[in-house]
Length: 418
Image (cartoon, rainbow, N blue to C red; front, side):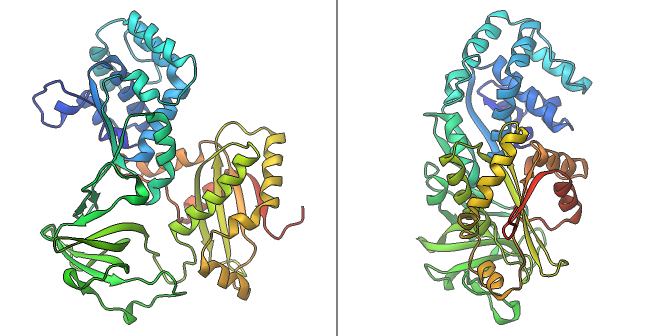
């Protein structure tokens, strides 16, 4: 969860430079349970709501999860503020003790104030209602995080959502000179001193791309309008390392290329779908769901099964709310009637392979609510840093595939007549 690394911020002074911007104590920031961390971050942030001036997270998805938790747990949070200590669901002793110290006893008036705001269940603009002095929300909203931007804007209301800079685990790549721009207009100026950059030409229209047919170009040789995969040699020892990011050059700032993020690069030539293709298809499907007043899509991912004959693309979708049998069957009917609008967004390579008969019927599975949250728990339990976790869009791990298939409530095939 993103908030485990960048919790709510405050102007209060603390000895640690990092903790000086945090409304949460060290024990919460360093905690090991993601859900408990998120709950405690919200509790501490509400305890000091008049002092909070900014909310930050590495990725938009972390804030979406935090606000969703607030929606579902606000009554318990109010009760905790009233009592002056966190509920028994917080089992980490160090975390409990530190949060109890932050709460500093029962906060009856504060609990009533927050309850009055939340009991109306009008979550639009909730950030400004609960934290009246917040001036901004800052997180990465580009790439696969773009799907969360509108929901984040809904929670933010009139509070500006600021874009982040271009950081990779391997190095800092670029800075965002206009942080007020929405994700689709965000541009990054690459930093020539952060690493030695090379650019591998990437043609979005090619069916397959052979690495031996491409040569990298340097900083000064990139061309405006063309797409490239970024390759870096860093001070820490990465040599000609492919970041896996595909960017489009849109101009120059002085002599530094200015780029927009396009997508994550395919891992192998066998992949027929990109993150961008999948996101476009799900945007189309989301529009259909809204016209028939069905629950919104909250998460999705795909898997290309190379072992089936013929090969098969599977898409796993999670929607909001509790799906009763009647609603689930209605959702299945909507899927069957509108498969073409979903398939239209899946990209040229998929359509070409499907037309040749190399790819079998598209399968779409509606999975249980919370399935993607469980994926995050599995990842963090296996050692993945919670602050850097991003829900997968292209699944390549069979263990994850089996879990998602086991979580399916309904599976619909494009070619099925049932």
